[in-house]
Image (cartoon, rainbow, N blue to C red):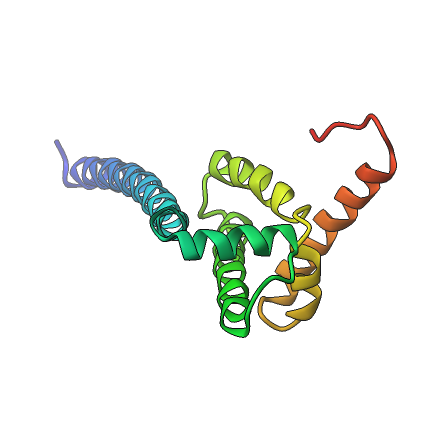
Length: 165
């Protein structure tokens, strides 16, 4: 084998090694992306569960949540503040979901499942008064998204017989 043939052979081996390295890096990135999405899913679920467990474990908090969702005025001032922060906490989680989904870091299945909950939440009698009274709590992009969901729900309510898809 001549020196020139040996040089060509070493170039071929080098290219094969480079391709193998690129394939390995691609597989590692894919695995890391899956792990990040799983971690994100877990963190969001934990956030919702923390609020749910608070409501479940404390009858006073459950009452505040029930009244807030119903749009009731039976609050004292401290309860009204608690209700505002509970709604804000929930919608900050929804905003995180929206942001992560928009950036491709959240699994579409989780977003679609929580979107059903979000579409229900914007129809709660207590939601719209709270939403309009808290205009600066969330990002403009997320507010526009929620405003769109509200319009969809209102249009659906005006047309009897339509079911949510």
